[in-house]
Image 1: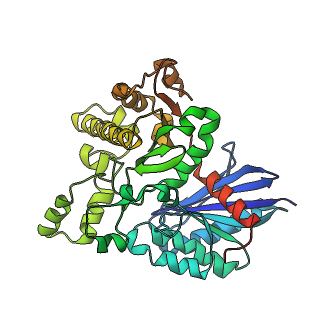
Image 2 (image 1 turned 60 degrees about the vertical axis):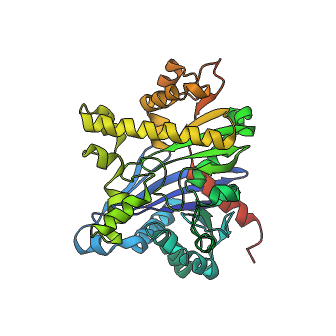
Image 3 (image 1 turned 90 degrees about the vertical axis):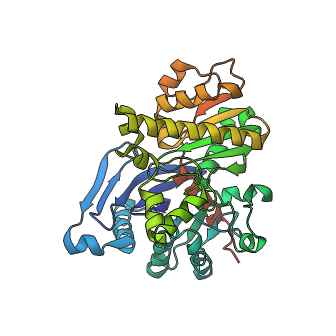
Length: 398
């Protein structure tokens, strides 16, 4: 009999999972999958690490509308029980978007932690509630099964206080309105893998570009976060698939003065803006890069432009630059966008190797480049599993 850890990642309309076998000091990746399209047409898919499908199901009618995150978790647990065979599930790790100012490290899940995280829902109303549902459900169904909460904000607690501050009254700052930063589990994984790839970058000044449907950038000094593009919410910073990124707060005031309520403004900025809003076509960069019309080109140009501006800002926060690292779906797979970003950063000392970039790296800068540029696939699930295994090996939190 072998032990295994499961990771859970609750999104806005999906619940993803992955199984890891504990093989001594190694984490052996196992089946992974998700229940997606919750609230509309739920679909369960699962596959082996080699890509072979091992499970699929759809729901329809009343079953589809009532499934929810609790039902999705129940289905995943039943599937995992059949998959484990003689192995034993010894812990579950969760990705939690917001840990507030108090959580700079993962924590064991109990009723007290759930109450603490519930109090943070107003800081992340579109993300936090869905993270809490699986934890509560597991506590009710399997109270003896250890759970670990891993916070996307925790990695950025190392940012200097000045980098966290908005120019608002101190009373509001003390209430928690500050720059938190997100995608922390991705950045933490990249920071842990970078020493084997480029020791100089790992010890020095590196900007990591997490470019996916959600996108952000992080300045690392010696592997620690010192500045990031996302702020109080995951809405800030770069142009994203459907999110607007950095926006003059006066725009929000104007929209409210024109009669839109808070829910309508949130829907506009989170789901109807970004690449989708500019192009009028799609929030998917693959679609826009293949298109041949002015709105699609404008959306891509704006995406690249904003990255270039933020890169200059983060390099200034670091006092110089030793390396760039591209990660996540777009960063890992789009040679065209990597090329445009690197060519735009020539003034910082980036010299693109066109052939290496076309191959996908891992190094995409030339040998004479003052600033190295790398492609490094992220693995947030492995990071969650690492934290879960570490906490399971120690005493429960007091």
